[in-house]
Length: 161
Image 1 (cartoon, rainbow, N blue to C red):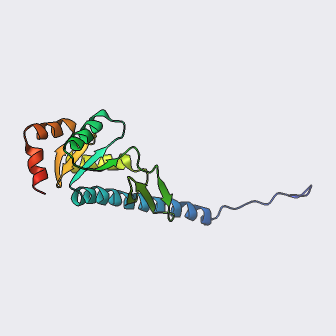
Image 2: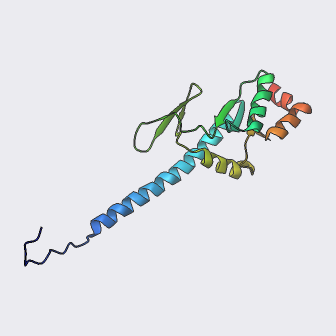
């Protein structure tokens, strides 16, 4: 507060706020880069660690068709519902999240469904859902899966495991 007749003090901008902003921006950038690596690792681990993987969206009729095909074959796929990821997560630390989904514990389960779709684009050339993998082999989408059932290729892949 200034007294009548006194000049107000000039507040000088120091480098501290600018450095603070830089630290926040750069740390966010490094977290994003780390998240990209984590998404890539998640996708690869899901494909290699499970007999059947479906990258899906819960409301997609083609995804529902793919899940129904496996249900009819009495097979239990590992389903990654891209639109539901992050809905059931707890914050463990400022940078790591944990997710309980389908009675399974999944790490780094932030709302990363879009990132996973872009990773699928890089990995298989498609970002549409569903994307189905059996024994690490990319089958494709719903129509590709139906074709693989019709020509017996899916049954051969399932029997090979």
